[in-house]
Image (cartoon, rainbow, N blue to C red; front, side):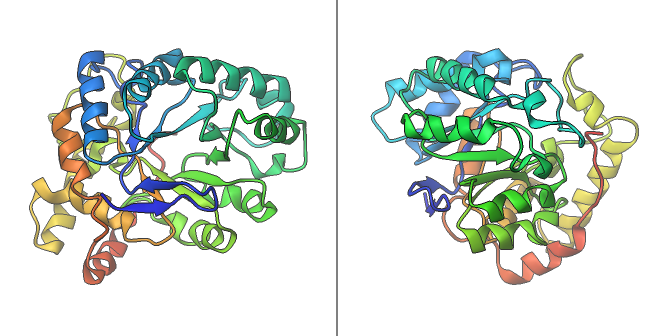
Length: 322
């Protein structure tokens, strides 16, 4: 496993981290705690040392599973979690005052709850689960963050940027307040490369990449015949004719690269890790098989430059969440 600096935090994290939304059991259906714990432990066996979770994932269930693994392992494992928006609106709409979303006392209360769920004395990274750049300099959230840092309850502060809005954190990055950002970036969603990544490199901000497989599209497993359990959010994400559309785009990628559909997941991760601004990528991994497949990619090699150039042609501007 290769390790990279998480911006200016002083932490070195595994290139492949663990996205713990899928093990919460509430949006991605079908997760079994026993299998999730096996997957988490196998990832640590293979050198993973960074796990991203959130208080909102299964109302703390994901955090509690992560905390169980952290408590039982001797290795240094860095944990990032998130404060959910108080108004429970994802992504954050424009025009709200931050006191409606992240009032200081609420930020403190959520942090205390996450510390209890995880069974740790300090959070390596505490993040806001949504963000609007217009909140900079408004409300008392910054004072709460500074107090939590001073008290030793959080070591670093970050934000999870609104879906498909990478430029909506540029002012925050330039302010020096934020240590990390989490953003959607993949073969289809390349827009963070335009402004966000250069700003992060300039200001020493760590980059955590989420949704590397476009919610499964870039694994090659989504076909027109794919079915999800009732209540699984992917029924909405891949609604209408979208399954056919993503399958055609995946086939076009592997055809151009002279690869097979079985290789698309590795290609997708390596594309992300080929950018020097990226600190770690956090695929969701609910099975030991997927852990072993994904962890092999964290070898510091990325993709050959000619393949990266070819993949630039597959940028796809759209928002399936909307």
